[in-house]
Amino acid sequence: MLYTIIKALHIIFMVSYFAGIFYLVRIFVYYKDTDEFSEDKKKILREQYIFMARRLWNIITVPAGVIMTICGLTLIFLNTGLMKMPWFHLKLTFLVALAIYHFWCWKKVLKLKELNGNTLETANIKLRQANEIATFILFLVVFTVILKFQVIEYWWQLISGFFVLVFLIMMTVKLVNKKKKK
Image (cartoon, rainbow, N blue to C red; front, side, top):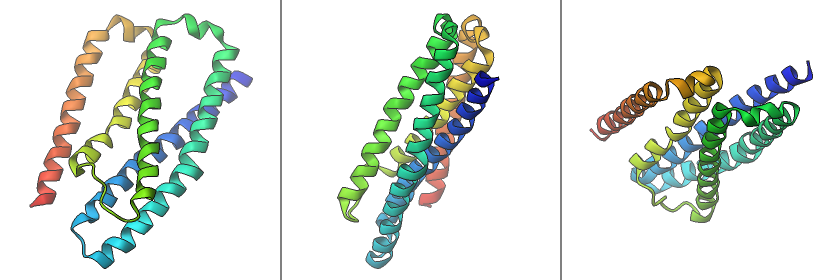
């Protein structure tokens, strides 16, 4: 029963964490979108986006990430057999990628504060594409956890499908960005 409760908490805080990460990078995009606005409007919106990013990071994303991690480590402690499973090693690899992405987001939150309302140097399209990285990691982790041993058995079909998904999402981002410019 304890294991199931901790697993439920792990999933709940994973959802909260990803919601925070998804919206955080969207705030970076919105901040960058203000480049073409009038100075007054730009100043007001950028102050608000900085405020929102810091609150989202400090109140939702990081606490949810910490609780998610604690629950995940507790699950491993309660079921050490997970460490012998190849699919679980794959999941851990994807979580390392998530940690790197988390670090990138943290650096961007700090950068926004340092900018004092100045322009974010990262190109808009790069921010929009970076916004999808968490989606890709979420797909990889969820499919790995749900399919478990089938991920290892059908790895090439899953990788092919994943690359098609990545391609479609990236093309959609580019298409939306092109329409936005017109």
